[in-house]
Image 1 (tube, helix red, strand yellow):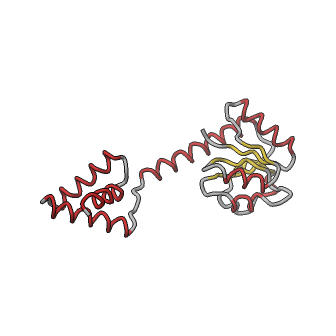
Image 2: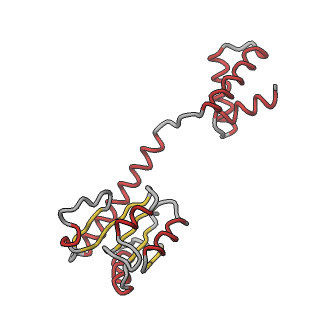
Image 3: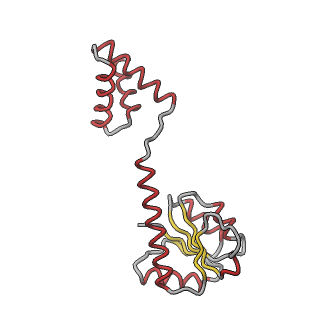
Length: 181
């Protein structure tokens, strides 16, 4: 489930947008009337979508976007006269007036984009720090000397320990070092 924050300076605008989303099966996590409220609530969430108007009493949508985590997308609902011809950066814009189905399909599209980014991020191999690489090499050396393993055997052993203990390979190497060191 995606966290949705609806933010408009006029509470009735926020209520209208929230009602459209809820009626279409999209739960709204927070409703806000200022940029500061959005940022405070977004800090408690890991990722999500902020649906907002162009300006709040305390900041513009651009300033809000700059303050959000990169794992949040911002959907601006505003008249094209406010943003047309400008580079809005990573802010997605839906011109008003719009149909409810346009809002819902845009939110669903953003949810799919976020899910795809998460999948790509999971597939990307994580790089090890120099310290982790050093710990792994030390553990392999101990296994090679003490257990007469080859380097590939020691590596495979650490991988198996890592999988069996459901920890990273560096943590498995630290366990080996603590046992033999």
